[in-house]
Length: 62
Length: 466
Image (cartoon, rainbow over all chains, first blue to last red; front, side):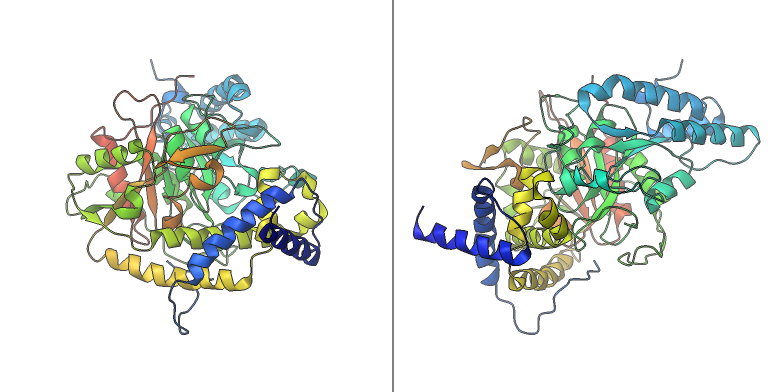
């Protein structure tokens, strides 16, 4: 396991504890994969240009 | 001699029951017998409500004998994904955990509306756990199997609905669609499916997944049957605060108008790559049948899929946080680990996704100044094998579970109405679906197009030979 994976695992363990979720070793590989996928997706999304006045759509009307 | 009930469309059953040539009790008995025969192999039903169905059928037949008028779905059997509340039945939502909850005290609004139209509920069907699924597999109850090839997935998460309708166990089933869960099983099982506009139909008394994206709708073997069910389910419901409050706008009256005057185009770029050739052949087939060579570009569709993916992870995880804390080992591991990762998503990602959603919506809606209907694949491939974990699309190996919805997610992300239509290409033993996408609130248009395709033989949903 490289340093980056150690960092992600430390983050996952800290956030799980913060959220009151008990992890075991068997869960870690899949949680890590899903977190990394989400993280890669978020990187692209956060680079999408949206200005300060853009309104979110949490209660959505099509 | 009449056709067996399992070969009849809902519209034919209703007409026969209304005329008295077939009784609702006969319909129910044939339906329950078929479920009893086929369900052990296909695993569609998790609960059969036989007593309730027989009682309702008896009342319908009595009302006909008394000269009373009957509803538009007289005697039509239907099933519901087991996230719909059914009085006195536990609402499993595909989970083991929910078995510990009390049975539902009342029916979901859409169940009550279909029964008010004299349809007959015959049971609840299997689904992917908590609807976080595109496969129709379930670690607790087993996979619902594809009636056209039981070694293959039904598609999810409304997999039991797909299996029930494609096998002729019920002509109509209600499903839910957050990112594609009606359109994916419609594609894999060769069915017509309607995902209405976001906010159109009441979600009251159904088990939620992602409030920002959840839709409910029917799967059936004809566009007419979709329209019959859809029209019966419309209307305001004070129990659902997220419903948009639209008036009832029936689709059935214009179903046979045809496609004259409609401007139709296929979606290019994102929707024309990243899948197997057959997915695009199916779109070509439908485009040719509709006489269109036009193409439009839905800009930023890949980003829309990304944003939908992140909102789903975050909202779905928040929905299940208490269960993840209390009983993580009772989840399907494939679902649990994705949900746990979702609890770790920063708020900034989700807010950005929701801001992007509004921007994307504005852009896509402008396309409807130029066209009325957009065509796109439903799934990147035909039904994959049960248990298959990866697939290769465009030369890239990727996870099956997360990627079957690549073409459905960017559309439901902004709540557009879609009729999924089933296509059988020459020499193919499995179907594949095409999305017929309309502007918000134009379910009537997408159903018109679906019906036209069916009428000319370009789309069809035969009962599987099981």
